Image 1 (cartoon, one colour):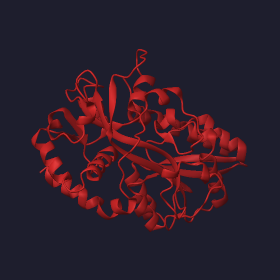
Image 2 (cartoon, helix red, strand yellow; image 1 turned 45 degrees about the vertical axis):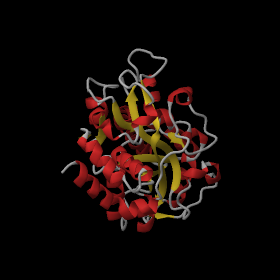
Image 3 (tube, one colour; image 1 turned 180 degrees about the vertical axis):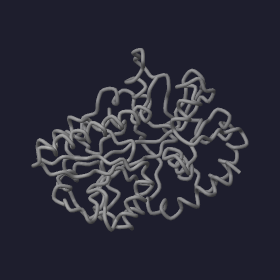
Image 4 (cartoon, one colour; image 1 turned 45 degrees about the horizontal axis):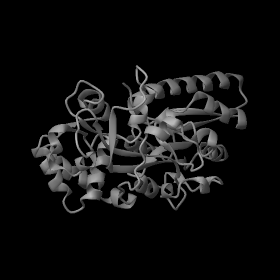
Length: 344
């Protein structure tokens, strides 16, 4: 059984290697401009999609792996006097306020921006353009969980059935912490104390949680995991034996909305080319290629979704959220408090 982010890690490496190979081969002939896209490690897009941009504009795109979103942002800040790329992709709403305040990107309002979902337009300065979104949620093993799954979120006795990722080292771990703070603003610390007392298991990252401990995807004994709303769709897509229905479900009440952005790095020597890439990444061609590569949803409202997403991926009707500025002001303190409560 496969799901979104493990497949992403393998497909990303292959996509990046193929793209860089294309760049090297094309540059040998001389003539086409080249720009560099700094992206998080989960970035993946079809080679044919990038090739379509090159054929349309004559511009080659080289992809530079920036690690996770936090590491990538730190790298962009540290190299802001001499940027290592022209465009950055993958800053999410948990880091958006910091990224805007650091002024690592220049304002750019794409002519296609009005086509994105309104809820993705979180940066009114236009330094960052929304590209995709998705929800981090509790996911449960249908064979192991009886009764109303919506009751799982907020149940302090869930601990011995739950595996979570450390918010200090994991993006979904941080998103779930933020979900609990949004849902229980005055009592989230007590909730986590009770989860600890009832035996919650904490691991460093998503892959260890999902493939090492979650009974719905491994030999693990934890029937509830922090994962992605798109994971059931990925489960169907990547099943070794074809299946019509996923064996796992999503607790919609727990979902925290993540939005990812791209921006033009200040100091780029290829501003016009970078603007063309931003525009292309908002096009139907690019946006409709996102779901089955990155297992998130396109920001472009008119983009058509693959049927497996329509049938099995979850978009919460009322997702949890916290203002990006509030996250920026409190992230470190919240993580420190969580660590003191749960791990010490």
